[in-house]
Image (cartoon, rainbow, N blue to C red):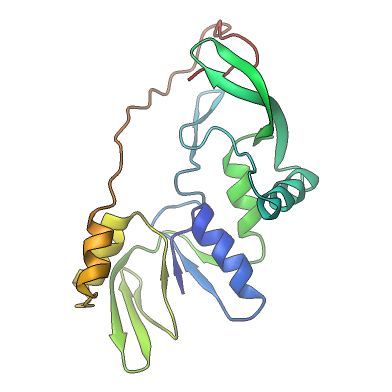
Length: 199
């Protein structure tokens, strides 16, 4: 059982599905997690990950597969700063062909993904695990939690799952930087320098 249908959960489920029966649960109506896309009027807006790039051969193969499937396309090849793209660094930045959510949709193909299925608790049950949610109780031999750490700790706590002091302390030290995302369809060109990205 994989909890979370974002990039991490879907990638793990794809890997595991060659050897195990895998079910992916996600509370959202769609897949993608932080690779989220919204549509406002005629505008398609990615408000999670803006692009993907590879720094390992393994992920480069994944991006080549995604490009071959028509999910991503090359965008630019350089570092981005306040003035837009600068010095080339040899790492292609890939964007979704239609949206970044296309990546998640491709990764979910062929998997048993159960959307709209919030998980409320995860508990040890004999030699396996008991997963309780709004849609009932599921059992699994193993559970992989890929949701953000606070959510994962919440479902473990709700199930009475006790972590070692060291593991608990390490997880509680994970922090997230908040951000504000403004989703606004524009009435004209953005005026951003080519390739349309600034940092």
